[in-house]
Length: 231
Image 1 (cartoon, rainbow, N blue to C red):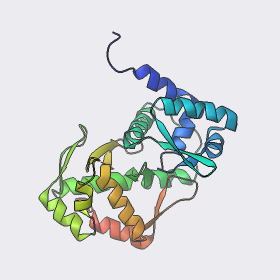
Image 2: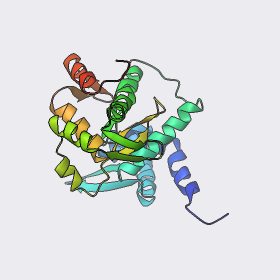
Image 3: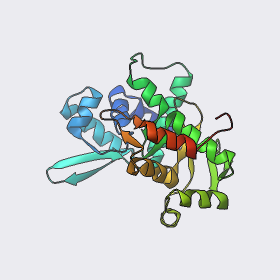
């Protein structure tokens, strides 16, 4: 069958190890230079430029110029969701990197996925919103809706819902979490909540890693705001 979307082309773009490493390096939502991405891919800058051109042509990356430098980032949230889903599939089939260390537990606990919270804390957040009726729908089918109760709850903690509603971006999306193999909250609401945690000083981004590190007080606040039935 030759009709329909060409998944082979996308698979080939992501499947190259150097390109996969460069894409993963952009999963924290930052924009990086070709030199930084070459380091992430373990290749020369000249080789990286060729790979980046292919990724940009394939719609996975966008670039912008700032002064003498060019910066690359994932083209949009859907690329981050795709990569997280592939990582989850690879993990479930036993295709894991053998390197382990202190960063791995931190990544599994809380990390940034493009621009929203993932890991155990990300899954807990969505579970809690479902549990108290703030969100309804089907996470597996990416059909999520914020309820009136949820709007009241989120406004109280400082989320500007009117601003989110004015955006073209979908407010509530589900994203398959690679480490938990369950859904966490993406979309503009997922971004707004992570931004809130960072602004309040409850958490900070880890240098050189996608891990989101919660302070003891920040963790207490987070667990209090998003409780589960089992505590």
